Length: 87
Image 1 (cartoon, rainbow, N blue to C red):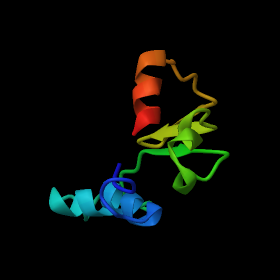
Image 2 (spheres, helix red, strand yellow):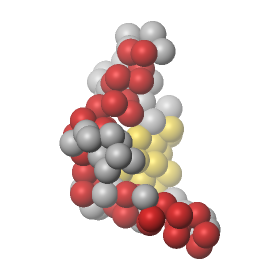
Image 3 (cartoon, one colour):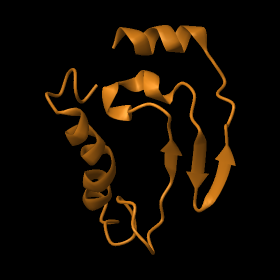
């Protein structure tokens, strides 16, 4: 949405969703970027997330506070998928 409706580049939208939000919340010293000593949750993908939301359909791994889940199953919701596709 930040790309289509907010005029941001894909990289700018990723920055806004991570580093910028951490800074706005006053959390930039501990989160917002992937660095040693920081709290990081992330999704590992086969596809380039900057190419669009479809990259998130089949994640390779999800890491939450240092604990990884290989090939997590993603519960599908047809109605929600259709709404997201329309954005």
